[in-house]
Amino acid sequence: MTDWRAIGIGFLVGLTVAVIGLALPVIGQIGGGLIGGFIAGYLAGGGLGSGAWHGLLAGAFGGLLVAVFVFVGATFLGVTVTEPVNAIVGGAGLSLVVVFLAALFALDSALAGAIGGALRG
Image (cartoon, rainbow, N blue to C red; front, side, top):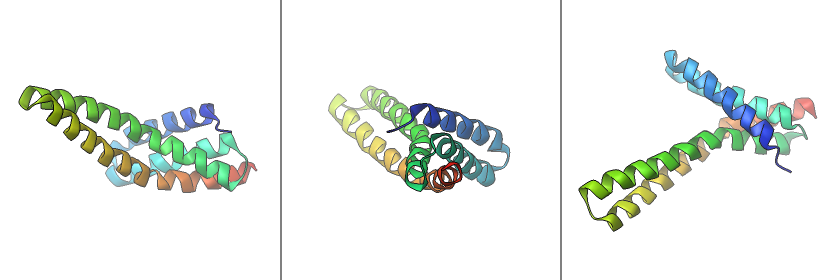
């Protein structure tokens, strides 16, 4: 079963580390994903699989929120410039790209979550 508390805490820790890590562009962003995923996996426990699942969700949650904002922003911007149908299709296409990238970038969180889940058992 998915432990949403662990995912929320992992997401918030990862977001905090990533925001603080803006001074160190690469290390801060990767560190945020790794630390947030580890925390989510450790809090959820249950071994490698459960830890990886919770770490993946904690890492991808931020990307999914960004995708929602991208869709809304692109749609509103498109409505002011082009026809409404074009704006919705363009916003949806851009959101799919953002969702794919969020899942791709959440892989480090899943790896760290697996380690955290294995440590807690």
